[in-house]
Image (cartoon, rainbow, N blue to C red):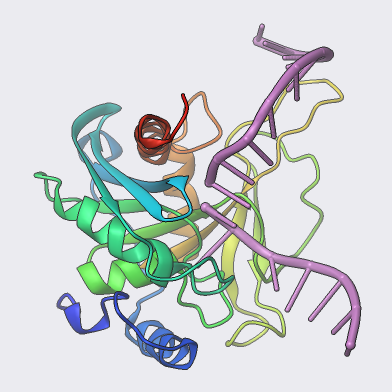
Length: 245
DNA sequence: GCGACAG
DNA sequence: ATCTTGTCGC
């Protein structure tokens, strides 16, 4: 399907209009399929945001291939709205789209810091970006916004995944697997634990493909490399733009 | 009304 | 997200 500039998250006036746009985004999104390109040949993007202060948002995007950065892009904008749970795309989306637009390579897939299908209307930031840009996207969140793990996720081993089912707060059938808790890294035998990531399909791929890709792109760190690189760029840039140090 | 709530 | 010290593990 084609890109949908008409669903760009910028300049949407009210929460009610945002909610309606998300419903269209969810209807347009495709939560199935997989990435066929071998991991070594895959051009994977990552995008993340940081905030020097309340009136400024920094978005960084990177393109990676087989572990090395091909290109990066950083933009600074003013957020259109404050943080509202469930409407992150309207706060961080415009800056993210601008940053991704600054990348020269064509992305085979984009890893996003936030949810995809794990969202009340199945239209998280990753889904919104995927539909607007028409590229496969994966949502990677550090905490669970909605849905329910089918079993405890307290101390999973590296590589383990646990299905996340829709709950009453999600606009789909309760038996639908909307994502996975993914343990990309774990301490061996100790009293210390690392929490899993909450991975969901953004667009043009299924939940299992999203989880497998996240594991494949995560080596020695908790976050998949493209997101980790983007996070580092955004955080550093925000620190430089911040008053004081 | 109260608590929950991606970043 | 950002504000912050120490602490644990590899």
